[in-house]
Image (tube, rainbow, N blue to C red; front, side):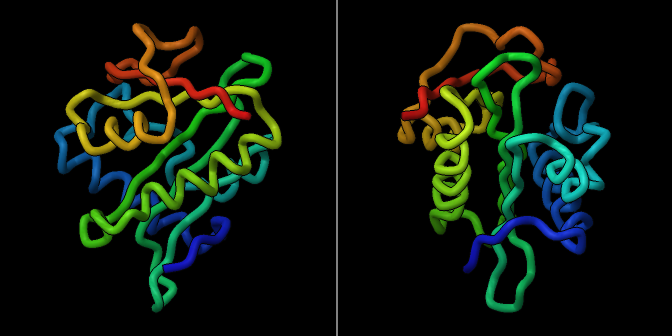
Length: 159
């Protein structure tokens, strides 16, 4: 497996991975990434944002099996958001989410003081990983949150 920055040719694959993952949890609902306007054009979205990147992880056949992004969070100075961390079911359980997060957080340290993320409590494996990587739970979302269906919020001080 290899991690690289997203390319335009990866847009469709990541859109499908994200949509299928959300559908598998019954989360193909408003207030989740499922309805994000940039979902079909992640390459273009992250390319135009300042201090933002999206990475994909590809297998030996160069097929995308997951991805993660970092982008500024709203108007909050110094805060980025870890976004759209999704892995195909076939590639889950191999530590790939941790690898992707490490790449994303290393990038974030160079541009931000804190990293924020939003998720759902029912995604127990994800929540466990966030805690293991030093994120602390918040009682409510940061002002400016766009995903109203989320019910778990985390922040990590980057140093």
